[in-house]
Amino acid sequence: STQDFIQNYYLTGRPILIRNHVPWEELQSFSKEEWSTLEYFHPTKTKFKVGGTAYPTLTNQSYCSITMTLEDIEQDARCPEFPHLHMMHAQHSKHFDEVYRVVDALEGSFKVIPQWFFEEEQKAWQIFFGGDGSGATLHWHSAAVNMLYLGTKEWHLTPPYYR
View 1: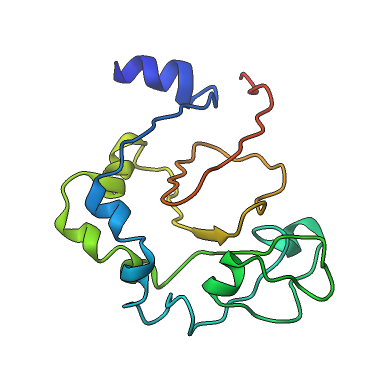
View 2 (view 1 turned 90 degrees about the vertical axis):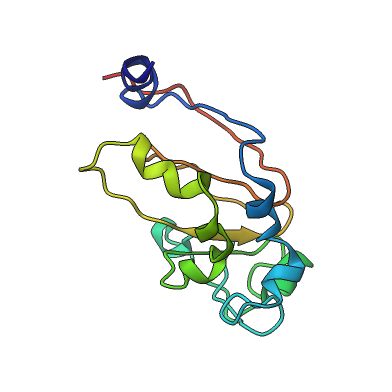
């Protein structure tokens, strides 16, 4: 029930894993073929600031001195300063609608997520991409929804904090 979800998962910060819930059309909107039609997120044209974590400066790290395309990141290009790290990019994107243009026609999909949370909750959409072995540092935040469109994700969870 909604009450059970709020009381036992949302308020306690317990994770929930839902698999195979994204519509096929939405998954296809993240294909290389589809992204090759994009302007801002074009796989070989746009270069992004990259680092060894999602937001390097939040953990007293530095961004790489060079920028990389999505294809560079996917092919595991390395930064001269950090040759042992896999690169990734993350941003709160004003270009979010370009990526999700196909989704506008779908009912359901990620656009229903705000209905799952309280209205007063702040919603911040972010886009992360990285090659094999990349990822975020250990961190905490309130309720979040992560959608993985390509690849696999390895999670390291700590016990939840109960209020």
